[in-house]
Length: 93
Image 1: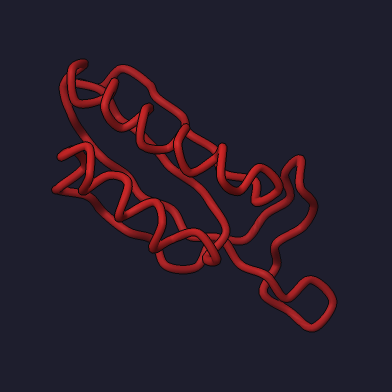
Image 2 (image 1 turned 90 degrees about the horizontal axis):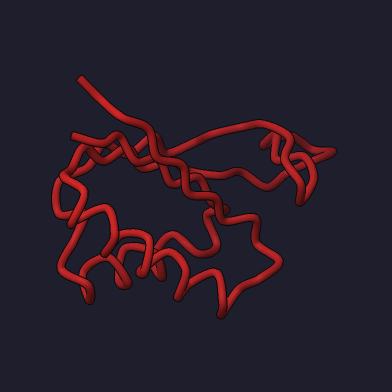
């Protein structure tokens, strides 16, 4: 099992979910609707100075599904290169 985390701006949330559905992966996930932090694309703090927010999806899956998730996320990153879409994967229990 792998733990996959997708962290991205709310502006591409629908695009990511559509791309996952198109690849038929990521059907089961946990969504954290408001995620704040600072990454390579700048702060996302949900306040008056840095009003944008990110969201996060956490998906537990097998290696084959993880490959499909990676393809889905890469397709959205190509369309929106400045949105700070990040994909992380780590081995699980």
